[in-house]
Image (cartoon, rainbow, N blue to C red; front, side, top):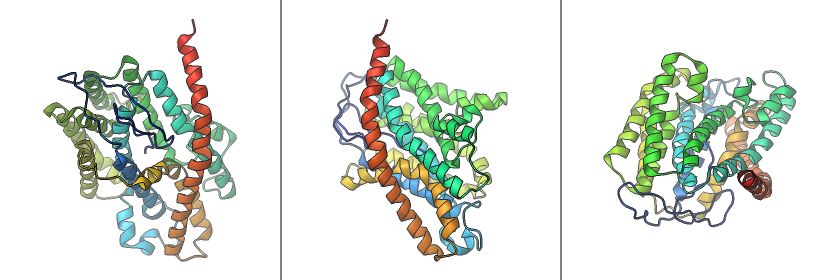
Length: 383
């Protein structure tokens, strides 16, 4: 999922969706000349795409998932063609990963590794902590497979539960582990200073690592290289280089190879979700084509201010939709018509996401950022 990330295009002033305000990033090395990329406006289209990906995932879990909340009759019987489409909504996560590769490379350019660390912590943890506590409360009131244990709650608050051997309170959280692995790998590159050549080398080395890791049959090695998902992030990173420096055969080759790797590994995911491979492949190709259009500047006409607000709801919506949404459906499906109920649940989730963004995410981030920045600066300057 992504996930939800701040959208800044160096060297252009652009606001962070979670923390409005201008920020100027320095020009960076170009592949062939020292002329910086021309100034471009903020890519509002990415906010819209993130929301679209989140809606896909919400639709999958609440309408399309074979293990969803609807008991009798099934979601397929209730929603018919809508269910048939919604069951492909799990692929919204793949779109999240592509967008994440694009925007993390964009937002990290010109930053120190300390700045990168602060931006990720401030962006991810406030809403996540609230979501974990909310999920705990919901699961205590409406248990699904037993009540959460204190160890599970504490482990989930770290966002490192996969590494601690603790189960996810909300199954949607698995994507956060994948995102964190990407951040850690990319932070190594940020520490060295981002450059065109360095990022291209990163894409090449990560591609090789993700292809080789499964050959050893070691689950840990597969996890730490994010082998099953790396190609989506790599495609997004290469597409940002296209956006920043202009298209060339090398960058398109990275995108193309990443797409081929993703499509080659897609059958296993499609079988696990009990959907067709061909429709899944068409959707993934469409996502790559859509992001390629973004990289080439084809969506500069998107200027609606509400898109940024909608994009800001994506992360809290993703965090709360599964546990809270399924609990609401389980409790109310015998009292409201299915179509009215699903509409009310979706509207309620959007409202809850806005409240979390407005009264949790933004205030806590404003409090955390200067203090965490000062702490990182102190650690850097201490002798």
